[in-house]
Structures are given as structure tokens and as C-alpha cells.
Image (cartoon, rainbow, N blue to C red; front, top):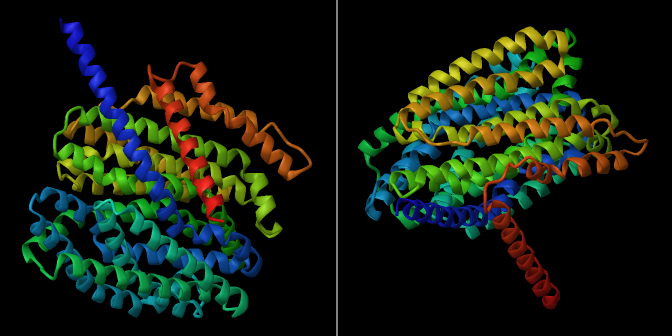
Length: 521
């Protein structure tokens, strides 16, 4: 009798899990289009950037964007995480609308003096970091755009919470088209160099941010709760050091390259430019998988846990395994063929950028894992732990950069991210599991990592005179990764069959889509 009950429970879990995976997959694919497009301007512009912008200016642009990103984190005060957490905690729709209205109006007002402060000190910051007075105005334009960027973040977060995927994709596609058009106009035709890129960002994010704010406020109404605002700030404020720590973990290596790679500022900025190009490829893991996936799964995961749905912990754990498998697979494909890809896409002056990509890609895989591991900390509202861990991991990264960048240059800078985020992810996992244990499948994830590393090193033994042929050979080998895992007994019962059904249904959907497209023509 107990065996029958156990089988029934197992079948019920498998059924619920499959429904959840299909839902996550369907929504994530939509957000892949929307979220990836909204952030893919830099990637699509690589052929233009590397031909119209010298590595020195490219490096300067990267440092300005880093400083602006840090300012944006302070301006936003963890608004995206706090809004979703408090929105789902309210059961009454009027209260939920008040949360959203409070976020837009309250955080918008709070952010203005912070932006003005950063603009006022931009000259000092520019002279310290870049040693060039001409970049002060560039930094001021970028800082102004960061306030509108915060409005965009709030607006897109709201659309994700309501699962308004079509509107999300429409707006992000419009944002991409406008940004690409303005970038090409300002850089190629107006010859404004990197200043044109900052103008493009200001115009694009300003227009989208204002439009989203007006649209949402008309829907939810104008209602500000001071007590709700205090709770939002108290929840989100501890996340600011966390996010800054995460960002500094990824970007501090650029500053160490700038100051320690060479006493010649021009050469040092060129090294930053090479690193930045490599990072543009490595960040694909985050832009095209982790961020789109968590656009749906982040709110949905908290919704499952907060509503205490049956098998919610097991579902969160299994989805973590599947998401990690996808990011590892993409990181493997990208890392194996990146040398040839950069030779094909970029100007010869950017050669050497490929060596940082595998380490950056792995760091973003680790970041993807952390978004699952941190569930317990968010559920228990113990975000202060994330701050402590961020500071510790940041110390590891800074020490690593200080020790190895002067000696190993680009490789020392690239490996610092991986070292620090390995420490960070481990500590997040330990603390979160103590607060709210979730049965993550660490053994299966270790198997996929080891298999991927072995395949990567084998792929690098392939080398031909043609960059295209080398690219095809290396990526062709590592594309077998899922089948190699099958030989090692990685998959649970029913997973292979389920994956086959998903692929089959996906193929049918694609065939139907293209058939309708041909008929429309």
C-alpha cells in the first residue's frame, strides 16, 4: 500500500514538474527574444565598434559604462527585487497597485538628487579614472541616462510580474531598433565616436522609461504609501552592496588592467578594450539565457514558495538543474569556437580577446546558479546575509586581481571573476540552505561540469588554416555534450522522453509558423 502511495506521489510530482518546465520554457523563450534584444545592442554592434572605434576609446567607453552601472544600482536601491517580493505578498489587487505606484513615484523622486550628485562629481571621477578631461561630458550624459534606465527596469519588471510577454517583447524590440539605428547614425555617419553611443542610450532609455511609467501609472493609479516605501527601501537597500559587489566582482579587473597592466595609459586602455570585447561574448550566457530565464522564473519561483504549493522545493531544485545544463551547454559551445569567431568578426587589432571568454562564461554560469541558491535568503527576508557574502567575495576578487593582473595580464583579470564567484556561490548556498533547505542536485551538476571541461580541452586540439573550418570542427564536437551525458547515465527516468517530446512539439510549432509566413507572402 505504501509503495502504491509512493508511486502515486512520484507520478504527481513528475506531472507537476513537466507542466512547470513547459510553462517556464514557453515564457522564457519569449523573454529570450525580448530581454536579449533589449540588451544585445553592444553585441550586434561589434563589427561596427571594432572598425570605427579604436581599442583605446573602446576601453574608455567600458570604464564609463561600469561607473554608470554602479551609479544605477545605487539609484534603483534594489527596486526590481523588492517590488516583486512585496507585490506577491499582497493578496488584494488594490494593495498590489499601490505597491507598484509607490515604486515608480517614490523611487523616481529619491533617484533624482542621487543622479545630480553623481553629475556634480563627474569631473573629479573622470580625471581620476581616465586621466582625460574630454570624458567628463560623456560621463554626465551616461549618468543622466541611468535615471531613465531605472524607470525602464521598473516598467519591465512590472510587465514580467503580470506575465505580459507580448508587450514586453514589443517594447524591447522597439528599443533595440531605435538604439541600433541611433548608434549607426551617430557613430558611422556623424563620426561622434563613443559620444554617439551615449547619446543613443540617453534618447532610447529616456523615451522607453517615460512611456512605461505613464502607461503603468494610468493602469494602477497614483497612490503612494510612505510605510510601504519604507519597507521597500529596508528590503532593497541591503541588496545594493550585494549588487555593487557582484558588479565590482565582474568589472574591477578592468580597473586593475587600467592601472597595473602597463605604465602607458594608451596601452592599458587598449588592454581594457580587448578584455571588454571578450566580455561582450562571454556575457551572452547572461543576456541570452540567465536573464531571460529569470525574467519569468524569478517571480514564479517566489510565487511557488510563498504559496507553499505541493512539491515546490523539488520543482525549484529540478528547474535549477535544467537551467544550469542549458547555461553550461551554451558556455561550452561559445568557449570552444570563440577564437575563430573573433577572427571572423572583429578587426585584427582585437585579436587576443578570445582568451578571456571561457573564464567570463564560467563566471556567468556561476551567477546563474546563485540566482537559484539564493531562494532561501529571499524567502526568509534575510538579505543582509547577501551583503556580508558579497563583501567577502569582493575581497577575494580584488586580492586576486592585485596579485595576478601585473603578472598575467588578461588571464589574471579573467580568472579573478571565477575565483570570487565560486566563493560567493558556495557561501550563498550554505547560508540559504540553513535558512530554507531545498534539495538541489549537486551531484548531477558536478557531472555536467566535469564532462564539459573534458570536451572543451579535446575540442581545442582541432586547428585548421581556415577560421571557419576550425570553428565548425570545434563547435561540432562539443555539440555532442547532451549525448555524452546520456552515455554517462546523467538523465533521470522519463527526462529523455520528455525532452524528445518538447523538441518534437517545438519543431511542429516552427514548421507551422514558417508555413503561415509563406502563405502570408
